[in-house]
Image (cartoon, rainbow, N blue to C red; front, side, top):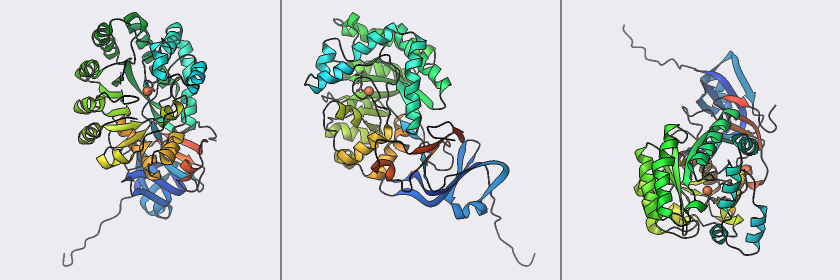
Amino acid sequence: MGVEMRYTARMKIKADLVVKNASQVFTSAGSPESPVVVEGGSVAVAGGLVAWVGKTERLADDVEVGPEAMVIDAAGGVVTPGFVDPHTHAVFAGSRPLEFEWRLSGRSYLDILADGGGILATVNAVRQADEDQLVRESLPRLDRMLEFGVTTCEVKSGYGLDVENELKLLRVARKLASLTPMRILPTFLGAHTFPPEFRDDHDKYVKLVIEEMLPAVVEEGLALACDVYVEKGVFDVDQAEQILRAATDSGLGIHVHAGQFVDLGGPEMAAGMGASSVDHLDVVSDEGLAAMARSGTVAVMLPGAAVSLGQKPPRVDRFLEAGVTLALATDLNPGTSYTENLPLMAFLSVTSMGLPCSAALLAITRHAAKAVGLKEPEGTLAPGARADLLIHDVSDWREILYHFGVTHVSKVLIKGKPVAGPRAS
Ligand code: NIG
Ligand code: FE
């Protein structure tokens, strides 16, 4: 051949679902400082995964939308990844409104716990409830989370505190996962506090967690991760380390509640063990932050718990300077943070913690996915990510934060399929 002809035929992406005509697609890709936002965008999905994101005007050229494909008109709304709530205690029985009032009049959370209330009040209620009751009480919470756009949610046990009742809570979490389209990631939190039976022998309870509870949880495949509440009067760093070592030896991921009131050095210990997250961190040392930055451990901030306890949520400047990845969670529980509203946590983070707006949306999508141990590109709308996405009834992504306290979600897609949302048709 005399003349070499070189051209590349552009292969079109074959989509089975397209969301088009968004005013903006906030992809959660890019950096917190310059997130990738496609103005006038669309998203194409194939096989339950994001296949393409781009300008709506490029859609016809780049994507083959066959006759069977579903086309959803975002009608000028904003598209984001589904929200990920990386820290909840969503399975529990009863509630504690009186305690709320006591705390407002000055009693401290740790005092109430030391007197057998707090977490232990919910432990009593859970021990008396059967699985059906727990499912009945917990499912509406998950429904409300979905209304706020949560498509993946971590759920902890921790209100059973004996073998039978910890297993019961995790079995309920498994049952709930079959009743909701949300992805539920269960965490074993047998070390949430010491039950009354072990009030005077804490080391014996630690032994029970390690030698009986954890193996039973692992045997039934009921949890993906293990968590410990490291706090003054609860578990110390040494006890937590023993439990978490046993958990990693059994193949579980690890999270830690630390620095809610007192910094005992939990972040350094957890980071050193490769924890995927350390949560609360209302008080944390520079060494703790440096250790977390080194290990890539995500800081999960819980502003709902802080404000509910009358604390000022921490400023994030030190976290960002140290290079720590920040996520946000509701911490949904009947004591310190009784809310299903994850975007409200993002609002609190930008108004009282100093998080930039774009970083707050990353904190409830991509960074929250990292906190629960999901791999990139989960929590984003980059090609290859699970196609969990939301259409919000707003025309600028900042309105998701700015117009606070309500849900703007009009449609939820999970694995590329529309699910019945609050106002979904
Ligand atoms: O993360 N601080 C420990 N655990 C929960 C509260 C649980 C409760 O009070 O029921 C939290 O805030
Ligand atoms: Fe918690």
